[in-house]
Amino acid sequence: MFHARSRRWRCLAVSVGVTAVALLVAGCGPKGPAAAQPTPSGQSGTPGMGQPPTPVQGTAPPATPTGAPASSPAGQPTDVPSAPAGPAGWIMAADPVTNVKPSHKVPPNKGGFHEFQANCSVSRTNLGDDPIVFPNLPGASHLHTFMGNTTTNAASTAESLKKGQTTCKAKGDLSAYWMPTLLNGNTPVNPEGLQTIYYKAGVTDYQSVRPFPKGLRFVVGNAKNTDADKFLAATEEGFECGDSYKNKNIPLTCPTERSVKLNIRYQAPSCWDGQHLDSPDHQRHMSYPVDTHGAAGWVCPDSHPVAVPKLEFKMAWPVNGDMSKVRFASGAGPTFHYDFFNGWDDRTLAAMVTGCIVAARQCDAQGHDGRDDQQPAPYVLNSDYVLA
Image 1: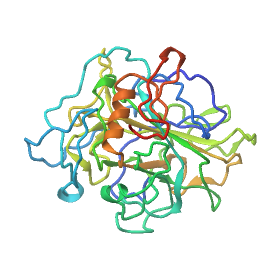
Image 2: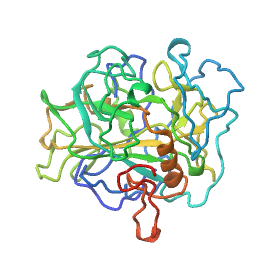
Image 3: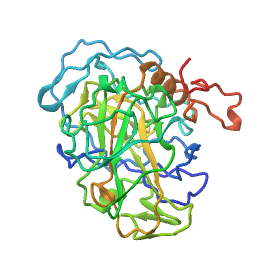
Image 4: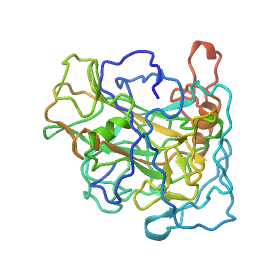
């Protein structure tokens, strides 16, 4: 399923929903040029874009105690204490979501926009740390480029992230985002300026989307993937380079115009099992929605019934011309992946989800929908990008 785009970017882009990654990948970690003032996606909020042909559902996790209180819906956040460790790599949520079934409701304006942006710049780079895959093992991973929280390292936890600062516009977004460092030969190439990470509805019933639980973490993609066809099938248009689309890998050459950058657009699963903040392979507690091929559209599977925001990375690197030596620290183009460790202030994230995704608006990083037909539109955050 493709979305109509308002314009073609002179760049290289990818959007991906990908299959599960092995437990110990060799370290882990959207379309248009990154600029100081990122623009809206220019695409409708129709879910399913970039989903794998056969969405990956997590295998059955260990049973968790029943009777625990359900987590608060969007707009009613709660403070979540440190989560207890589960068996063999499972980290249980301290406040699990129970008695929830996937929503098959057909909402109004289901084909419109339901999103907001996180605009973040690089905080640290060329660092071989990965607090999800290799916790407390500094240097054990391939090189990563980090955005958001300025303290992210191999020892990062939900508690330590709360004490950091952020390179994101929204001061309440203390989340850690990271991906393999891009290399041109042996030279690291960093994204310039503010990059865009969309928070969208991944299910058709956008009104059922609730905020991420505190401390949720997951890996999107596969650092060991070598199947370019599988990679292409899970993207919107494959790799782009100037006016060349649907490339299975990073092209060997790109136009040398200044406006041409290497871009990637990549989508995450948006259904949570409601029980675990992490899993042994860092993916099984998450799932992509499934297409009902009916009025209900895209819904979460029964195994992962809780709809959460769909992350969509939209990165841009200043590299073009001879691309024969351009690769990720994890390997060739199809090995691209990224990691997310939720560190949002609960109230701020809940307000953005409620005011933008649930309200069917196309918001910027301030929670404002600037389209002409939306005026006058409210702002979720004040001019300092803080929730009042």
